[in-house]
Length: 273
Image 1 (tube, rainbow, N blue to C red):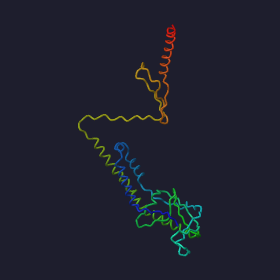
Image 2 (image 1 turned 120 degrees about the horizontal axis):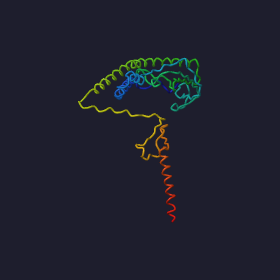
Image 3 (image 1 turned 180 degrees about the vertical axis):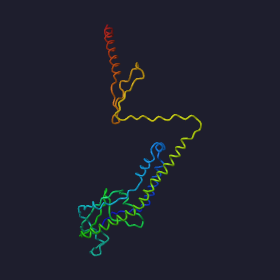
């Protein structure tokens, strides 16, 4: 009826939970110490929970819609009721594909994993935020197709319920795991900061001053009589530096220009003699 299946991965939800646990512990161990000391623990715990909790899908049966019917090819070479000269080769007849789309909320990836290795895959596929069920037959009976879809939806919901049990257990454990590890690391960091060898403490590093985009600032000379650069950075916008012609540089340019013009007027008659 369909070559696509849900819950067909060899890994189970128990493997998924173990992977989430290892990933969460690694993230807690790699979190920079200054962040642990500076930020409230509740914020850090909430971020870890948001990132590593499992959101098992929930089907919305009220939103089921039937997709357009399509013509389909059906291989009947294995049908013993049909005459065939060579059953080793496919023999196709025209059929009809009927489909329904069922919206859901939750993580689509969890449709891949079974609650147990002994659970069977279920025909279906995921398209964005919908479960699509397909039934292909040469002459489909609408009532029989409806019953088949309802049966499959029941199997899917039962499989999700079994996955949900293990996932919710992990979700309950996750905040405590995050809190315990963060409290351990914060306690050690605070204890380490109190260790002293008797030498004067180095002054704390100054935090770098970051200027927001759009800030206008002037580049000034060290001394008033120092000839300034002609251009200075004026405006930072969209990550690009725009330059403006400094007023002091304009004054110096005019002075040098006037002096050159005056000397030229004096020297030109002497050169002509």
